[in-house]
Length: 68
Image 1 (cartoon, rainbow, N blue to C red):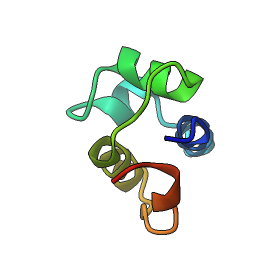
Image 2 (image 1 turned 30 degrees about the vertical axis):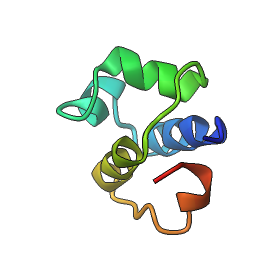
Image 3 (image 1 turned 90 degrees about the horizontal axis):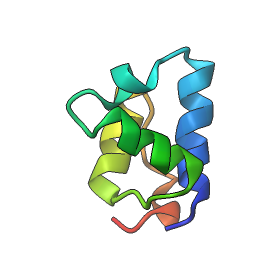
């Protein structure tokens, strides 16, 4: 997976003024989201889709960045 996907999630989250805890609720731990955003941990495809959906975005067009 491209580590840029975590940065993408972070940029959108900050732009939409959404806290890590709120975004990650029911998807992953906020600490895990922080690791995704920092590029420390790789995000799986289902988590990516869930986070993008929660942010109100479609994962379409970004699937090349993550192994679905």
